[in-house]
Length: 181
Picture 1 (tube, rainbow, N blue to C red):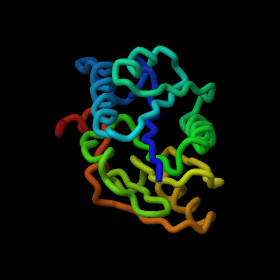
Picture 2: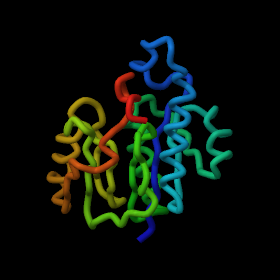
Picture 3: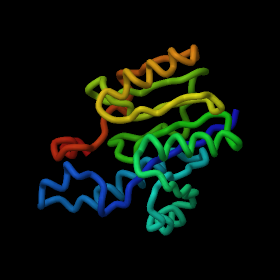
């Protein structure tokens, strides 16, 4: 089964508005390094960055990954478009956010059949989704996304599981999240 990792990214100088409240942080550098870690950890699987900004082309080229430009303005729309277009090339996608603190293993773990939702450390968000392609799945990121994604799996009657204890449950949204980097 062919599997690719999809990493949605905003331009580094615009990402992570909550971190930008701390003027002592070089947020663009932090975001770039987190994204680099996710992408490197996703190897040897093919990696596709999804972004609305073509300024990420040089970053993608430097890591030898594909950039899929999206005209969509929201994360859900961008991922929906990417999911549909990549369904012709891959049997399964791993959607991994570019701000995971500990992304090790993304490229080597063997996903179970069906949909797997890797929750954030609060048990409310979805940091990583493993999903077969060619489903009528609707992405629903934002506060409480885990429950909405679980509802989608149920609606589609697809085998699914939730992992609440994954090392991928820790992402970086707030300055306190940087403490364990």
